[in-house]
Image 1 (cartoon, helix red, strand yellow):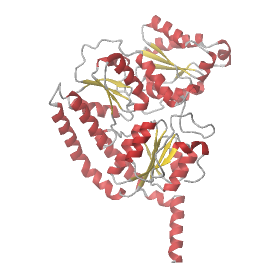
Image 2 (image 1 turned 45 degrees about the vertical axis):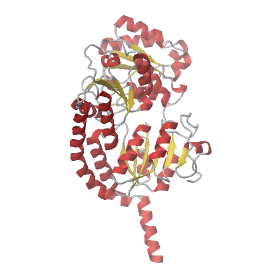
Image 3 (image 1 turned 120 degrees about the vertical axis):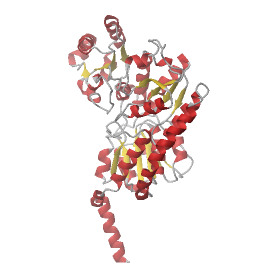
Length: 461
């Protein structure tokens, strides 16, 4: 690596094999680095917005509402209220005299117009500065309307995106335990940390239903207020995006004694492992669940592997780079690329913990760059240095890849193709194959310059 890494960020970048592993993370983003990481408010809305039958109101200037309308591909099987964007649109006079009256009026009007089952009110930076009492306004409106109205203490300046996850979990925990649980099976679970991008949670629910497990609540993809209110009746919590919903799982374990498992539904290994771990958890209550799980996995793999083998022949030895929001996706993607014969040269995340990066260190190959909270300059440098064939990331990483003439795979909010489950692994392999093998990359600047360099070398010989 060269000097294009900012000196203050050197401890957040590690190359496996260059000395003992050491990694700083979960730190405030370096000022001026144009970090890929977002603010507290952004983190909270990422978690809560997929709750489809709730009203989501941003209390702040209109600019903050850019983080709301249709910001991610979280699909709903029913209500679509989460796809509308509402803001109190605070102006200069509201900052001077306070915005509580405006918030109260907005809540009453919106609840009367849309009849939601609950409401979340998001605090932004300016609200934290002027000191509006969201708790009092929400409590008053809740008493008058008869629905839960929950303040989300998500002032952007309070920390980074991970702090927003915590604010969202605190808000949801106010709902948990407020409805009866009489009709919930002892073989039941909640799905935490899946946001139903491209309808993925429907695939996962179907797997659990096929092995005989009741899914009580989706938290939060295709989520419903009433399901979250009775989620304390489930026997188990499954936490996929541990950064976003782990706090809620811990709260529910402490308050209601519900154990949790950290899982991932990306890739063949992790999807199968998640199903088997759930089956082992319930096998004493329902012994037949083990055989049903084996049958499901066997049938899915029999359909999957012949297809994957076709792609592997072309992709073997190609190089990939990964930079995602939650570190759990990075673990699964490293394994998924290995399954189709590709090498991972770079892997990083916006919100990983020290434990996450230690696990990445263990499963990656020598020479792999591991990075926390990167920025466009660093990512561009790493992609060029490693000469990768495909970059997996989100909407903010896409321009970096295309400007460098590198293939790109969207593994974040905007994707329209499901990538979870066994069918998701096939979709992922198909997309990677079509991207990497596209003839268009022969005309990209880096490939053209390489071709010219090779020709000159041959002439010199």
